[in-house]
Amino acid sequence: MNIHISIVQTTYKRWPESKRSLDAIFEQVGLPAREILVVNDDPSSGLPEWLLSRAAANRGIFRVIHRSSNGGLAQARNDALQNARGKFITFCDDDDEWEPHTLLRLLQPFQDSSAHFSVGLGTKTALNRGLVDMGVYSLRTLFERGVTPPVSCQVFQTSILRVVNGFGTHIESGVDHDLWVRLLDVNPQVMVRAGVQSHAITDMAATRMTSSPKREQLIARSIQVWRPTLVAHFGPSYAKSFSRSYSNHLRLRRLHLLAHGRDPIVNLRLILRLRGLPGFLRFLVRRYLNRGTGFDAFADVGATSGPKPAP
Image (cartoon, rainbow, N blue to C red; front, side, top):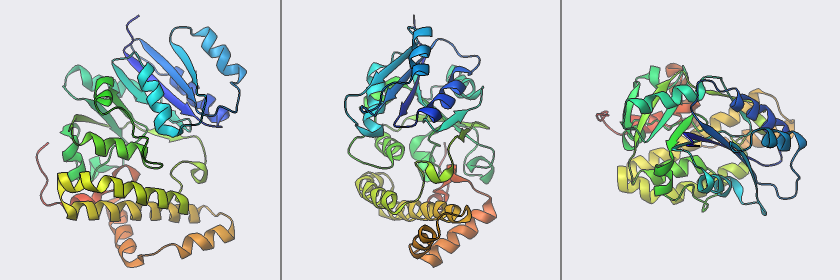
């Protein structure tokens, strides 16, 4: 069988969320030949009965990779990439739930364009802020305009990921951003689609995007790793703006956590860590006036980068 698309889910100690996410993957409509790869990155846990039953019922198109050691998100995805048979590949986190037409909408652009991957933006994003329109852009152009593709709505040509050896295992946080930064040297063509987004299954306080002090420290290290590449492509001013915008975005997430009411001690610690308040307030005002969302978290980077380049 010629597999058209490989759908990958990696999971770690979240089987209930994984099941709900996989149910939505199986409900994707209008897809050509597909395969689903589940990577269990928790060697200490057994595989649940429902997963084994689903694998038995879908032999040939549903495969489970059980890692012998915990390698983290990047290594788990790379295991799937190494085993993928599809011309295209996509990744769905175990705490995300796709709408039934998500993949069909992301695959359609490849029929009429030479794009290397497609990304889906929701309704209140960079599209209606004038940063981009629907169409094909180079990845560098998206960075220059301050747009970073959403993590959970992307379809890649499998070959373009293999060119850069998949996901980088040298960082601990920001795995998807690291991939986009490393892809800048290749500068692939990216198709931007509208009205495509996923829904988080878990509460925001439990997702990978929580703004914990540990995450901020890890992201700060990752930014230092990315800095030489960003400077090489866009200059030191852009790299500085990127770092500042990333920090402000995490602060905004932290503010969101405060609004949802957590433990008072945790709230106090979060408040005390709101440093650089004047710059952050300016960031909030811009975001409010422009009605932005997390998909274009770095829009103020584009604002410092001069006139918009052509797609």
